[in-house]
Amino acid sequence: QSALTQPASVSGSPGQSITISCTGTSNDIGGYNYVSWYQQHPGKAPKLMIYEVSNRPSGVSDRFSGSKSGNTASLTISGLQAEDEADYYCSSYTSTNWVFGGGTKLTVL
Amino acid sequence: EVHLLESGGGLVQPGGSLRLSCAASGFIFSNYAMSWVRQAPGKGLEWVSGISGSAGTTFYADSVKGRFTISRDYSKSTLYLQMNSLRVDDTAVYYCAKAQGAYGSSSLGDYWGLGTLVTVSS
Image (cartoon, rainbow over all chains, first blue to last red):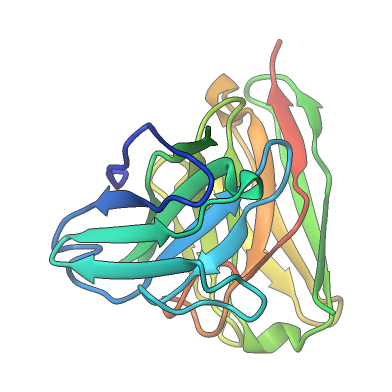
């Protein structure tokens, strides 16, 4: 099972918006609407931020949004805040298994 | 409140075995699929294995197939991962995660435990 492709790092200033891409294939992202995004701070467990491409769990800020086009999913964070600095991982279902992206380190300048 | 607590990690020699446990509370255990996800030091997340809710159907990543066995005890609301023939590259923090619903739907984890460290070294 090949990992999904994410940029290694992105950065932005407080108040700006950033987008993290996640590219897969027709066997995962392109074939299912079960794309999720997780936020992980150093030494902490992952936290679900987006599920089913664009849905936010209760308690997650509406500054976080998700979308998908073809085999690529995206996570957009608007109004960047210092607390958003973390690693972000995308994940997709793929017939019988789950696959993650390699992770993107978000730096808030 | 949903709570997941992993245990059983530790230091083991290559070729050895270890059993991880994940005690679950705060939800109807049989209604939800569960997964194990690992993270090697300084690396990204890797899905390891999953198990469906009431039926207990199991799924494995190719990297652990034939060596690891996932199971669940409904009476104890506990998830297990039996790890045999351990290799150095199995060294990681192992997290258990509760799915949002049935296996293969929605997301693999809306709640995660804090993880347990497995170190495979001679």
